Structures are given as C-alpha cells and as structure tokens.
Length: 136
Image 1 (spheres, rainbow, N blue to C red):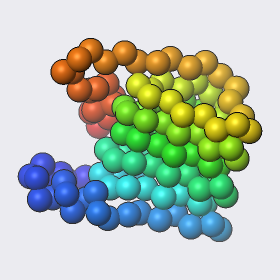
Image 2 (image 1 turned 120 degrees about the horizontal axis):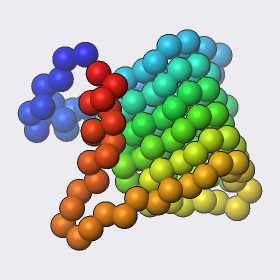
Image 3 (image 1 turned 60 degrees about the vertical axis):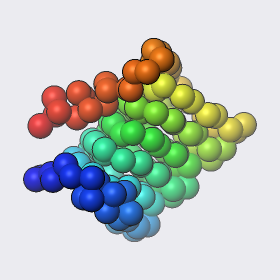
Image 4 (image 1 turned 30 degrees about the vertical axis):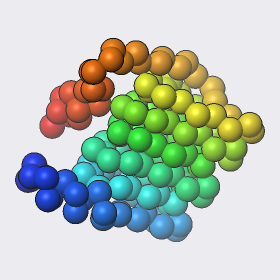
C-alpha cells in the first residue's frame, strides 16, 4: 500500500472509516491507515495506523496492532496498542496485551498477560510504528 505522509492525507485518512459488517468473514491480513470498524469475523492479523473498533458482534482470530482500540467483541491473539486500549463490558480477550493506557469495564473477560508500556515525559510511543514497519 502506498502512503502519502503529508498532513492533508493524514487528516483525510482519520476522517475515513473502513467497515467490516456483520455477516462478512475475511481470511487474511488487513493493513489500514484509517479507522477500522469491525462487526464481522477476521481470520488474520490487523495492523492499523489509526483506531480499531471491534463491535459487539466482531471477532478477530489473529493479532491486532494499532494506535487506539475499543473492543466490545472478541479477540484471540496478541493486542499491541500504542495509546489507549479500551475493553468494554462485552469484550472477550484470549491472548496477551501490550499498551500504554488501559481501560477495562466491569464484565470484560481477559485471559492472558498484560504489559504496560512506560512512556517517558516528552517521548511519543513509537513501538507500534516500528512493529508495523517490521511487517512490511
């Protein structure tokens, strides 16, 4: 995927949204520069340089790497989040998570290990960008 790293293209990517609706099943890896909203089933890894939202009917069987994530559905795999990972009350996670900030609602299910990344003052989290680059 070609990326134009100008400020205008970054802003327009953040305004765009990719939807994987209920009833859709994708087998294979997904890479996106814009918000990704999943209500269907993805069997593969997801790398997103924006936000990933997994709706209540969404199911991921694979790893998720992104800037921010809000999970209402289920994930079986490793989750790496550069900023905020939010596990809603209906979420079910089987696998390890690594993030800078974590929010867990009562009722969320999590079976795995959690590693909280520490970011020094005036330092921006770059581990996701480096991980995504390694996948290319």
